[in-house]
Amino acid sequence: MAAGWTAFPSVILERQHGLGLDAVDVNIILHLAKHWWYSDNPPHPSKRSIATSMGVDPSTVRRRIQKLEELGFIERVPRHGKDGQQLSNVYRFDGLIREATPFAQEALEARKKKKEESNERLTRKRPKISLVKGRNS
Image (cartoon, rainbow, N blue to C red):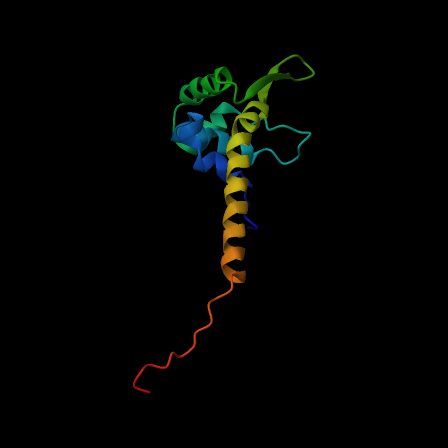
């Protein structure tokens, strides 16, 4: 843990196919999430650093981020330095959060139902067992 960790909603991993995401898309989203430390400071890693970490060409990351933006999962917001030089984009996840929310609600309902069923099994009265005397006893 001391070397670093990233909290990420399991439902996005579990339902990536349902969301229309492939492994490369999820990997990019994970890399973006890795840099999102504070809710009011969206991540802004460079595409090159993501590509280097993934072992792919930066153009692959650029194309996939464009696709994720077209699908409405992420939003790129340009950043510029004081001298007007373009810096790495800021990435917002509002669309991904919105699209994953129904899956998360479904997972919460399933978890609640499973817990209720478990509690019901634990509190269910068991039949009393008694010896029945046969005719020959």
